Image 1 (cartoon, rainbow, N blue to C red):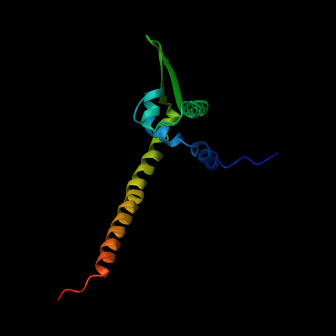
Image 2: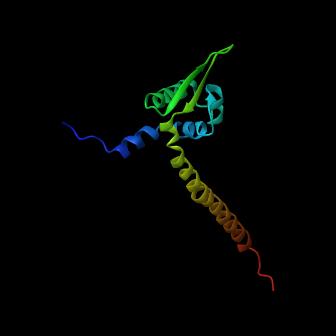
Image 3: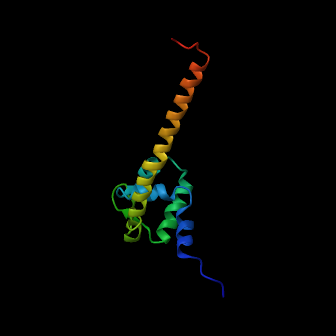
Length: 127
């Protein structure tokens, strides 16, 4: 009998797939139709998005609801299990705003400073 994988490893493997975190982030903002979701997360191809949504539905993270209207449409939303991931996504967003955005800004400032210094390196000194 093999060892059960660590639950954290299982969760990471489930969430690490391309588009998954973006899907969850967008559905955390409210229910979305397929085309709305596709547009909001950067236009993954339909087969990929369908596959991710199906996997998340099978895991009990996303709910799929057929809206009986003319014409009918499908709407996706987070289940309570999916809603429980919102806090983690909010922490990731805060981290990204502090560290990723900050690093990009700092890198841009450093490049601009280096560029100004390099431009002034060949100039004669002014008294």
